[in-house]
Every structure is written in structure tokens, then in C-alpha cells.
Image (tube, rainbow, N blue to C red; front, side):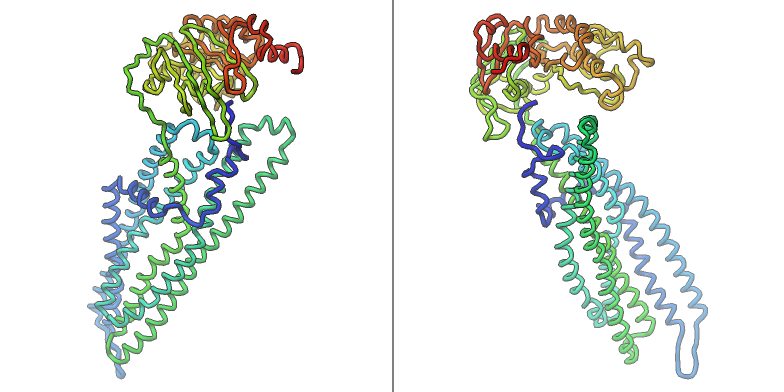
Length: 611
């Protein structure tokens, strides 16, 4: 693997972006994040407007109910001598009130349906865009970010947004409509009593502002810690055999327990600040009721308003404070969703792989001449990996690249495939700069067989077809036979229809490597890169595939990253990388006779000589 920046547990840089977010007190750009989130919601405009329409009807019905109750109460006339009731008007009013409540229930049910659909359609679009962004990110991004944290953004953060939209979007719309409607009606009843009841609004704004300041910090931190835990779990699952073989189970448990405790403490603080918002709002709201009852009673005694008006005013005051309280109670979810949305948009807004290649380049016409000219490259500025490297490869040559660990062997491949851009210098294929070649055509002319095989949870047939999507089953079987993989495939009960487990774990390492080679055979590349493709198979399996590999490399430019020097003695040229430069090159016999870097490497492997 190429040397990478120092990484912390779970593949995270200790001083990198994840660590930095732990000190945030608020999102970097909450306003812009909210704007983008609203943009996603607005993509389903018909559903969104339908929800607004339903919420408007519900609001109007809810606003009508207190007025109808006021009419019902005023049907009862109280005097010192007697009490009179207009039963006819009262009956009609109560029937009307029942109809209002029934319709409100029906439309509230419709609101739930529309909210759920809007939520799912929104997060489906967001999840699709996020995944599309992920597959277009440069290799460097995935190498320097925790995979578990990226997965957390795709799952936990998106799900938090889904929950918030389904639960809160209706409350927000209803809240705005209710607040406007109640204020208008209250002003019509009594402007003075309206001003008295709204006096608590300023107290509400002040308290919510103070609590929000503390809440943001902990909800952002909670999401980051959750991403780190996911990264730790993913690392544990992938490296489980290593953990067990070294007896580090308890260490892993202790480390996870420590991270889990940090999340627990942060979660408690976040929920405390989030949960205290509702009770505070209720307290302020109840104080407002006291003011209305006291001043309303005095106004009724003076004859300014009726008793029914006081009842209606209290109900309208409740309706005015209800959306504020609901939003306050859901503020924790809203903050979590905004924090998650910001993390999602960070990935979406990350620089994608650029492709300026516009040259007329046909994969079928590639000869395979490769030239590295004065290449300088570093993964991090202070640690240069390649220094003024020059390397020329002729078409059809089989070139072995050797060197000590960290010398830059795999880096050469990363640069040729444009996984990373060079700092300076030029790389050409058939005399054409690889940066002028369209990236998809460049990579279709190259096939890579890695030491660590990559297989997908699909059938064996589809895993081999990954090399060429339009290949027929006969071509797939021919490629498998060429790689000597057909024997073990045919022995499987489902043959080519056998579904592989995740990572191909239901096959042996040697069988997985054979499938990877068959995939490269099917791709029929002009340039072949082998990262010690046979190092993970047993001796018998290696003998089976050597003849296939020789045939595959015939008439192709082949770069072999060699760890075992015994496998590259018949290479046309052996290139020794030392200190980021080409130290020497030649045949096996020439380099042994020169007694330089290659000679010392060879002696170290086969003679046990320490140099």
C-alpha cells in the first residue's frame, strides 16, 4: 500500500477534519445547510403543496373551533334572577363543532400520509445524490476518511433527516399558519388582550435562544461521535481475525466502551438541553394563560367582552403557544437533522475527480508504450515519495518493479491509473499524456489484479463479468477456464450462479484470486498490472495459474509489483525503486552481477544476509 498520512484508530487522522468538528459549537454554515435541505424537500413540489393545502385546511378548522365554542357558551345567558339557554342555537352549534373535529381528524390523517411520502421521496433523492457523489470522489478522499464515518452519513444521518421531515415538517407548516391565524382572530376579539397575551413571546424567544446556543454544540458532537463508533465497529469486523489471533478482544471491548461512554455523556447532555426546551416553553405558556384569565375576567366585569370570548381567547392563546412548544420539543430532532445534513453535504460538496481529458483516444488502438518523465509526488507535502523518477516501458514488455516496503512501487501504479495526480512531471501512453486521455478510456485500457482481491455480493458469473459488462456467458466461462478457475466453479452446487458472501468469504483466498484473474482475462486489457497477484495462493494453486498468467501477459505491456523475487526472474526488465527513484534496472542476471540494490534485496530474501 502507498504511504499515507498518519492515521488514528478507525482510519481517522488525529488532527483531521473529524477531530476538528469535535470543538464546533454550531454548524459551519447552518443557514446554507438549511437552504440546501429545503431545496431537496422542494423537489417534490406537488406533494409539498398538497401537504401545505391539507395543513391550511386543518389550521382553518382548528381556528374555527374556539369561535364555535364561544358561540355555544354565549347561547347561555346568565343574569341575577335566572339562567336562559337557547337550545336550538346551542344544538346547531354543537353539531357544527362535532363536524369541525371530525373533518380535522380526517385531514390530520391525510397530513400523516403526505408527510411520510414527502419524507421518503426526499431522503431517496438525497441518498441517491450522496451515493453518486461517493462513487465520484477521488481515491485520496476515501483513503483519508474513516469508512465507518462515511457509512454513518449514508445511514444514520439520512435516517435522522427522514424522521425529522416526517415528524416536523407538518408541525412547522401548521405552526406558521396557526400563529398568523390566531393573532389575526385575537386582534379582532380584543387588541388590548392580544397584546397582553403576546407579551410572553419575547420571553419565549430569549429562553429558546439561550438553550439553542448550548444544544447545537452537543448535537453536532453527538453525530461525529456516532460516526467514529461506526468506524471503530467496521474496523473491528474487518480485522476480527487479527484481533482474536493476538488476544486483543478485551482491549477492543475497552476501547469501544470508552468511545461508547463519550457518546453516552454527549447524548445525555444533548437530550437534557433538548428536553428542557419543552417544559420551559410550557411554563411560559401557562404564565400567559394566567395573564389572560386575570385581565379577561376584569374586562368581562367591565363589559368589554363576554365570558365566551374569554374561553375563546384562552383556546386561541393555547393554539398560539402550541406550535412554539411543538417546535421547541422537536428542536433536538431538528438540530440533529441539520447536523446530519451538513455532514451529508460535506461529502456532496467535496471536490470530485476531475477529467480534463478530451483527446481522441481509442482503447482498441493502444499499443502500450509507457513513459514516466521526471515524476515528483507526495501524499503529504512534507513526505516526498517519488523524486525525479524516470521510467520507460516498451509495448509488450513484462516489467517487474521491486523495492523495499514504502519505496514507491504501488505509487507508480496509482499515478498511472490517475488515482492520484502527479506533483510535477509527465506520464504518457503511446506518447500521449494520460491527463489528455479521457479517464474512463484510460482505465478501460488497464486491468489490475490486486494482492487483496475485491469481490462483490453477487453471483460468480456477475463478478467475472465486472471486467466487461457486455460479455456473454460463454466468454465468461472461457475466461474462467483460461485462469484455471473453471474446475472449482464447476464443483460448486450452483456453478456460475453461486452467490458469493460479502467479500467472497465463502471461497478460499486462492479461489478468490483466481476469480480476480478471470475478471482481468475477460477485460482483455492492453496494459496489465499485477500487484503480486499470486502471493496469496498456495503453491499448487500458484502452479495452476502461472501458465495462464504467462499467456495473459503475452503481447501486453505488463507491470508486476513484486514482493517475492522468485516470481519475476523471467521478466524482460526488473526495475529497482529506492528512495523514490529508479536505482537500477536490467535483467535478473545483470542486476545480480552488478551487486547493487537488487543484489542486496535478493540476498536478504534467499540467503538471509543482513545488509
